[in-house]
Length: 246
Figure 1: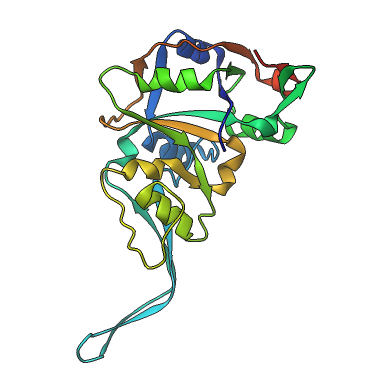
Figure 2: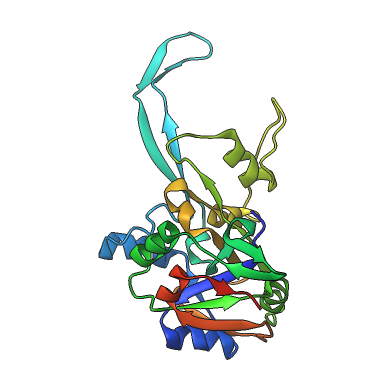
């Protein structure tokens, strides 16, 4: 998905902070704790920054004697990468041509009621929506946060009940294309890609992320930046109607 419009959902005062040039980044660990403590799966996610691996039943034999050494039962484990959960993350939703209609030379935002219902369920405190029309400018503004390196990309959604080669390829190379019999290795430097993967259960959020690569945090941090995009802030229920795009 190549988004054309960004929407940030939240309380009005929090959204106004973004327009005023203060961007709140959160350690991804907060999303894990949010589901664990508040049982809010949607905004929270126990699998944030983790990879679920399914292990089939297997037998281990000594390479020389062929003696049976162990039997590994069928199981499932979660792999967490070092420092990933303390990387600063800013999340926003991206909408593309499927949500944009054209008529008489004008463009209109028309998000399905199903998607809005999902957002209101996942983000229970959200009362308003910050609609950002020039996403290229916004991406550039965030990328220019002083003294920091910021990665950005849309979320890649995978079925976490299946260990897909596409996901492993993305984590290792940044591309879902893979070559047969080619070794794929994830490293500390590319660990941020784990924060760009989520289970398909979250796909209605159509999330886009910004990740600070050179700092680890334990609590939310505000980074000053220059907000220069055309925008509007509307009550979230207004999205059930058609909105003309600037």
